[in-house]
Length: 358
Image (tube, rainbow, N blue to C red; front, side):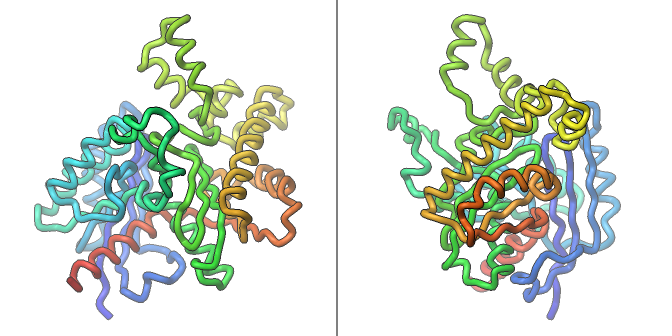
């Protein structure tokens, strides 16, 4: 069976992950396998992104049939899509909600086209698409209905990761996804939960933007919106200042004053740092509370799934969470390695097969 050579580009505000493999159709339902080639680059504001990305493309080990891009905010898109000019325009319109990620992704799309030409098929795989199955009571905010008319609603993020983790958990349980109720916990520098019932997302903690919900590395997660109004009225804060505080000066970093990295928080706790301990305790409390919310929405759960850098590697956090849910004796717990690039490749391959069959 002939394979398809797929390049995956997962570009973010601070890193670039590239993945390349030759996939056959029978790979679609298999567990993620080691690809032929990967590249992971961290960058900062000083990095020349175009030169760096050009160098990465120049190091590819073989030809490319299709390219799959992670697009953080898909807006109205409910599934993966070929990157036509119309789709690219729609993605650009969502940059106000996920500015760093969507702009970076579009830059990658342009550079791939410059290198390989306009005939190479590029595919957008949306982080929000997995949550397109949310019911209205989960995605409509309880403000004026005019908000919803203006596109202000819960979108949810990390959908690529949640989708893979849920499907892999079903495989490990040896059960049909349609039978299962799962709580997937994507815990990394960004963090979110999803309630997955019958293979479909029915609730999630992130919302209109990737800041709602859980406490994160440097993001606050949910806070009383009255705090923001107070800061603007009484202290003269601007929208840009609040944006910087909520996204880059809060979370583990903001409480500990040390780091947004959970590993450094744990090391500081070992040294007796009280603010680091408080940061961990708040993170744990918020996580347990939100898992409880997902549990209630699902009406029970068959498994709790941890993924992402913190979810996979922070044993003390997992142990404390599991202890809180010991009253559920049949709850299975899985630690599943995040495979966003594999999932992007899989979805791109599925889209190409579906398109060719039409």
